[in-house]
Length: 425
Image (cartoon, rainbow, N blue to C red; front, top):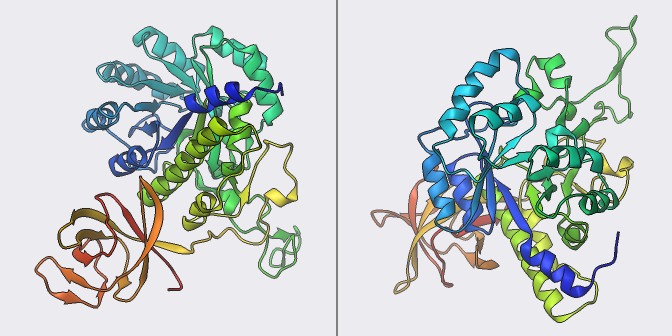
């Protein structure tokens, strides 16, 4: 990659977009509140996350208003690989979408792109990672068709990304994943789910068979199963670790990535808020560093630690530094690491008496050490010293989902702050 001056790095870092998933309205709002520059969301049709709650034509307007009033962008996925039976519906659907001020549409199927060109020619189109763009000639091909952003295949190295960037017009941006689950198949183009569970991954219904436990069986010994790795439980031969580039955002930006994308439209609001917050802090820390120093950037440990407080697998840097070896896979199990639980959201706060109104999300008790995080802080700890219901009745714990509670805090909290606790406390 071509070496850049500190001023060039700063210019790129100040422009980079942080793009977050939005599986529903709550997750969209938390993504924006916790620092995303843009969100991507799907509808109930023609999106590759059919199991997400998604949006419909009744609440798309609300989502767009929430983003645009705060100077943020919203991109809509229409990245299905369409079959013949989908085509007539797509014409009607895209015609309906013309009435919304959607900033861009994420597409992958050339047929869908053609329909957009006919029905909604003013729409900005971003090419999905599902299109498997792995070289600069392919990127230029799509740019010549009017695509304004290429969401790169996950199988590219930083060096390859840098080369693609140098070959593209300046007005075409590159987007790449920085955090989230890695698909064992080429940029998500998988038939394993379809074959094993009749759920088409390329139409939004993946059952994630790459996470299942497998054993080896010999044809004539049908009842004798042999683990491929002999640990007595079978093996997880296709189970990738989660991608995480939070330690390397400087390298991503330096390679020419203009939008850092977080995977996870199926994830919770707590996951989205926490990951977005960590990357927002990381980008801002990198910008601040470049303003005062040309020395190598080192991410503050407390920012990286935020990513250990969500449900996750072990982390890998994927293909960015070359083809992954066996260390990028978890051959032992497919379970998540869950060290913290999301226990509540601050809905209101009375500064005079230090009492917060909290919506409970998971059980906690008086005496628990609670960690508080918010868009304008990293975190601080409090002890849950007193809990009451809305009528003022004291409770020893908070076991009821989404119960509205009153809690005393020593430190000031604000609406939309998140409460969590370590599971062994």
